[in-house]
Length: 104
Image (cartoon, rainbow, N blue to C red; front, side, top):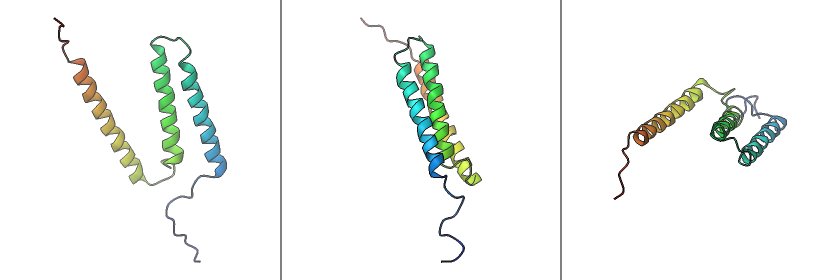
């Protein structure tokens, strides 16, 4: 076999790195499940959204290899999140501008 591999791009993360990310995701999952039993009022939603963002960042950086892959993949991921943000903003604008219909 020649010196060049059939794979292009950076080498995949090691097994140890994948296991550490898995452990971190499981700890964050336990925090999410445990926060359901802690009465924090409206701060509970903020906490869970922060935990969800941390989990999404771990998945994007390590499993999607955004940390080491090409800038094109960075632009595609950014475009996807920009589209998601636009859809959420438009849905929220629709929800907040609705007038309640009186029940008669």
